[in-house]
Image 1 (spheres, rainbow, N blue to C red):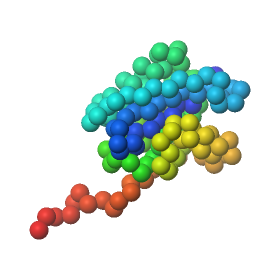
Image 2 (image 1 turned 180 degrees about the vertical axis):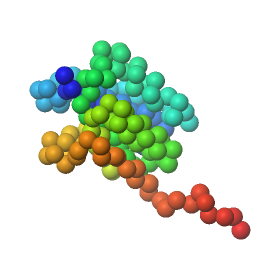
Image 3 (image 1 turned 30 degrees about the vertical axis):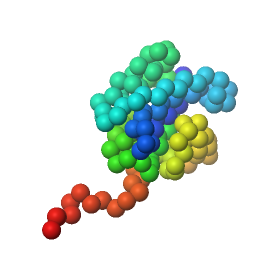
Length: 146
């Protein structure tokens, strides 16, 4: 039964942490909650998928049980935001489930979940829609030095 929500947040610029949660929404959204924080420092791209896999296995949740992914799309660190959003989109595509991007400075994973789940319940998202990262600044990586 696809009744679990995976919540991903990698946008916290102060902690460079990976915040993950699994929620069961069969009877509301809080009956079963599994939350984990990983201090990834500069290794979010290497540690995010193994962290998700570990959290799922620890809580006996199969990927087939996931019905929704909610991801914090920023603002935050460029790399953290990019890694979290790209991973959420890839999982959404691979598992054929919707992904919802929540923009804002919500640092608490419960706030990210609440906003994303409300959008999901209102039918504001369709499968195949990508979460788009929100960067607080204009890109400048291709500006030549003078």
